[in-house]
Length: 436
Image (cartoon, rainbow, N blue to C red):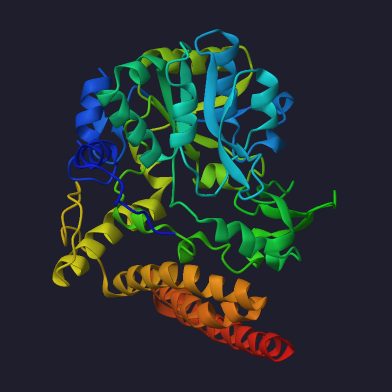
């Protein structure tokens, strides 16, 4: 699907450009943050800081039903129950048969509890903003960095919406996925796209590491889910960036710098082995910090203070993609005389090793190929069509990852393992193709 501008007036286009998070006509995250937050503490990697924590809800809070530490759901519930907001704008299961997820408004604790979890799926914020604008109620918005920035930009232009946007809660984001991501994983567990009713992207597995979660899919009319470990599924490796949206190639915001508070996965050694999951939390307002600390005193949450370096380390791969990768992608585009947005990371400004550069370019190529080849697979009804198209690239990417992260003898052993694994995959792919 491609956006069409034909019916838009010059003023319409100017208004849209002013609120687009990737437009050169919009102010950047630094400007927005200076307007919003008073804390003098800042870190160029993270943004404005009032406090940084690692946290998760207590056992009695059904942590197994949350994607990570459950802190986003905990905070929105506390805000709603205390009457600080009238509702929460967030992504949940869709009532539309054409999409699995959409932005919704939850106004009761029960709605929030039944709509928890992260959803890796493309959504539209515009419809729900039109729905709530001018209703006299105040809302918390939950979203990934670009959605939060877009809401902040709209609030700068629209006084009515600004008065209703009580709080923005940011979600650390590796990149956004198209609907094909859910369909691909579901197809591999035995549910074809045409039969797909719903999915769960983060099924926690007791006694496994936090990153070893599962994926579940439900076929229409069947209450029993099909589940497999996400790491076993093609596309389950986030570093491959399959189904990434093009705009994500131009994002430099890791910790949702325009949000009042940001939550992500605390991918740090001291938390990685805990299957329950742990959030990294960046609070930018004292009142949010106080609310979180009060929860700790009541025994509702586990909480530890982190440094800015800890928070950045928890998202090391994200910075490689959004900062190092952005620097190279911009330089590549400029060299090809393509238009690029003005970012806080300048083209070619960050050092990138030769091996890392190959990974960055392969990831970009694979992201683009995944959309096209999956459409072909759906049209032919053959998953093997997709696998045969992307496997050569994923195999090379895996080899490059191992070369970049494991030099010397360890690297040699890992590359030998890669050769064996990729050979077995090619054999399996040929069998699937023959069967199709």
